[in-house]
Length: 157
Image (cartoon, rainbow, N blue to C red; front, side):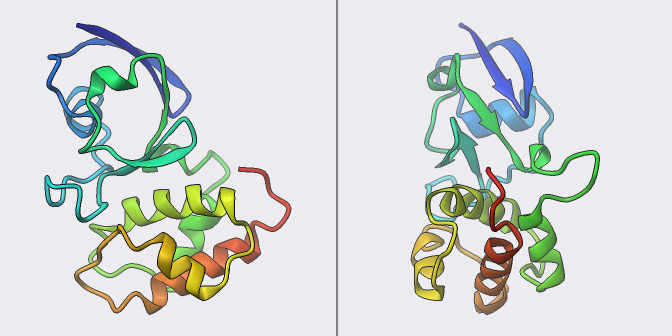
C-alpha cells in the first residue's frame, strides 16, 4: 500500500506493508533513526513523535494510519539557526544521561508545552509519566522542561 506523509516538513510517498509500524517506517524507510525503539510494548515512550502536533508513541501506530498526516520527529525540532529551546534546555540542565529516552522526552515535552505553556513541576511530572528513563531520577528532565517553558514564553509552537 502506498502512503503519503509529510515528515519534518518534507513530503514522502512510500510503499509499505499494511502491518508496518510507524516507528519502523520512520527508522527503516526514511532513515530517521532519532526515533528510538525501546520496549515494543508502548511502555517506555522512546518512540514518541508528533502526529499532527500531538505526541504519540509511534510503536502503537501503523504507518498506513499516518497516510496524509503531518509528522515531526526529533530530527525536525532543530533549525538551521540551532537547537529548539526544548533541546537546548535538556542540554543546559543535564536532562539526559545515556540519551536513549531523550528524543521521546523532548517530543512529549513539545506537545505538552503547546497545551500548557506555564506548567508546574507536578504537571510536568504527570505529563511525562508515559516516558521512562532508566538512567536518571527525572529531576533534571523535569528541570529541563520547566526551563524550556520559561525560554519559550511567547513563542508559538
